[in-house]
Image: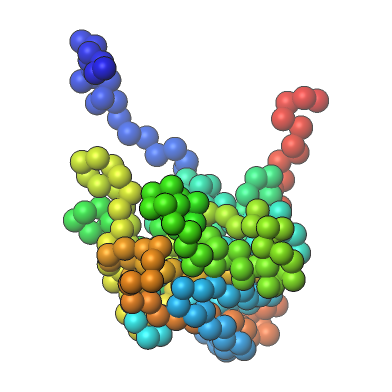
Length: 283
């Protein structure tokens, strides 16, 4: 049953939009430090993520990592944890609120409450030029979750084991040497690396379109804390047609672990946990 608009419906709809958080006060890494940190980066390890699969990697605090397109247009789903405490992990919702629906150079990835601190800073993004297209799409979103076998079963009635959720689960099971059912709860909402997404202008539904990423493109991060990461090479390939199947062309991704100079490491400081006293007004 359709509701009847009130007489003042139009005036209610014309209330001014207010950005929820004062983005000017969001803590950011000093640009001079980032420039010095990037000046002498060396690759100390490379992790290969196979198509329709996932791999884990570790990054010491103060080091960095790059996610690279190497053979063809391909998106990836990224999970991050505090390497020393897996209950502290990437919080896509808060990252979205503090920055935007899509992130790029200078933005930071934040951890979950009650930890609430930056865990990685984006130091370079070769797709920064893309900005926002005519459909309202952008690159590197924190609005999608991850393709998963549960939703796929609801929509298509089949079991498909190479969704990003399952890929990440298998990778973590191998990393922690535990059964999949014991690590699945660690898998969380992702940063959709290289994925081009938005909301349709008419129905506001989540959409994807072919990623603009090409071999040689990369996104680079500084590890604000010691990190354990897992990256899935999405079965959707560049997400320009479909996902959760074996029909779309898919390509590997590379993760390079980066060591800065000793001088840059000496200037680095690890981010502290939230200073909120956690009394919640009860004392």
